[in-house]
Image (cartoon, rainbow, N blue to C red; front, side, top):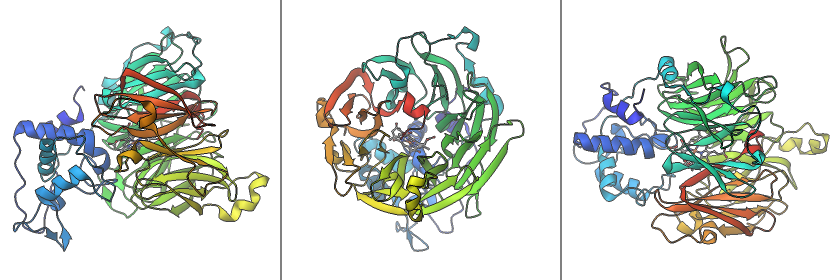
Length: 558
Ligand code: DHE
């Protein structure tokens, strides 16, 4: 199955039946070539937030009953504003206060007008992707018995970084000690995340196009040893980490079709596909409940699979794949990203449309708390530290609010017993700026780092903020990463994104997510002094975003 989701959308004759209670103008017509171009842009830039069926999630519903005007050119349905061409072009170009980013530095005027027309038309429904198609896409490039039996390179693998080169469909493997690029590996389109096997030998890289690549770090030059396409549109992957199952299984979550796939860990051979379609927490059927974050428990043979649109958190027990047992925990909509608390018993996940954090007790297999927080929480994996006044806390940033929220988390350690009354409460909101995507710290660090790449102000988007965790009352320092990199001026904003620690916690690496053809950089800071240690740049360093330190990712350290 070579076709991508754009091609599949074109093949599909089936369309969503959209009954409208009121007379609307006909949708603007598009020539076949324009439609193809718009589909491609929609998949690459819009579907992640608005959904393939345009039912909305992180982004608003974009079905024609909202996007088209009525016959008089007015915009009412039950008193609610509908949009129409001009308004849509403005929203796409300039963004909104609701969190929609501006696309005028990414799309041309012609493309913006085209997208405004496209989304007034009825969405096509792409086809399903069966177990057989998953199986047919599976390739073992280096069989297990032809792989090394010991590490064949001299790299300090613990401190290797797998870096997403977003717009070139590649991952750069960078030696954290020498800061040299070890290899640039071809992967799926707009790679989303890298995760590690429990042993730390294998890196799993998932592309937005659903292509999962397995990299063997023991090879003389680490390279891809197996591949499989798990769907048409995907974001998440993890591995089995419970004792006795190390490196045995992998799981990847798909946005379209909405499902997850369980595979053999060392070959990616597909074993099982499970659909996530079903009822939302409000009791309504949803045709597109996408798999958002997945994490692997170390206290049970289980994965925590977060289903965005249904608001269901699934605890998938992989001890018997044939007779798969799943605990389904209702929480809130729309589940997105999250991370473990310091004890690794509780998983905290953002329900970004409800402005809540759901905390799951993976030991008891039930919801521990649903915590109200500020607008659009976006933790990445969050950050764990011991607050001077409130004890152990987990931090999340927000896309839609100017704070970093600290939530008290439980601990069995008697030295933290006094903090129990605070557990699962928001104990502090630290003043930050809106547009934050990731927060990060490290057990040996005194600092908390937060980015703000989605902020509309260029200088803020290009900076990160660092707090001294002993005194959180004011920002310690705002660092303009783009200035520190010393790269030539470009039209595109160089968004400073995703702080990530070195294995020993002494350095913080920040990516500059620039234009899709611009040479960019990763700036490495000394975590103690906050001084620049190194600017890693290279003509192939295009749109670096997520960075995954092997040791920290392997052990869920954040
Ligand atoms: Fe992400 C994590 C989905 C846009 C960089 N992103 C995640 C996860 C999900 C997700 C579900 C959790 C995976 C897990 O832990 O298993 N991201 C989405 C989207 O749907 C969205 C909003 C739109 C889209 O079209 O994809 C989106 N994400 C982005 C970006 O534009 C970012 C900033 C740059 C990029 O490379 O695409 C981006 N997302 C990341 C990163 C992580 C991530 C770096 C992992 C954080 C970590 O520290 O583990």
